[in-house]
Length: 203
Image: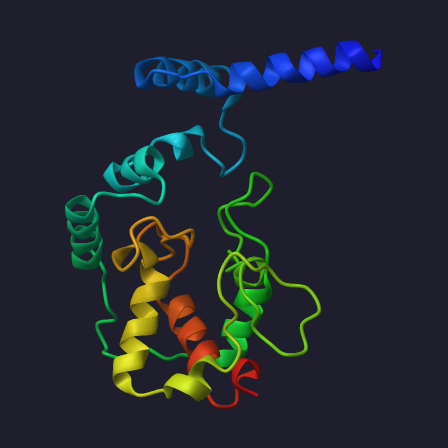
């Protein structure tokens, strides 16, 4: 393709992309794409594309949720958080580190009996020794050293892991407990990873 034809093609593509789209048109096109391209594969089900009220609102408004709607959605998510019946929020930080560094879980190649991973390193720095980590979320270095590890912060961290959207409706962080991605025990281990003074997060 010569340079002139390429520039015309790019310009046309850009113009189409920038053209206003009616919500109903978008919904119809999305439904068509989902029907055509999404299918169950292993434990990854096509139903993942079905949105609940919160997801639909965040898709519609992105990061500009109307304040009243934001407060309503966050309150609903907060009410659904299930705290440990034994009142204990911290588990084993070593198990938490293993979980945080594991990229397994909820992919088409996983089996139902596979232990899911937290994928925490995809978004956060967890140790000063890490050479590769994501930056979508904030660095968690010295998280417990700065905040302490009393019961209030333990409860707060557990809730954030269980459902980050209870305090930030359109947060990128998955709702690990709400969506049954991680078990109560696994979430306790992640709380320990963040707060235990012996954890690499706090060294």
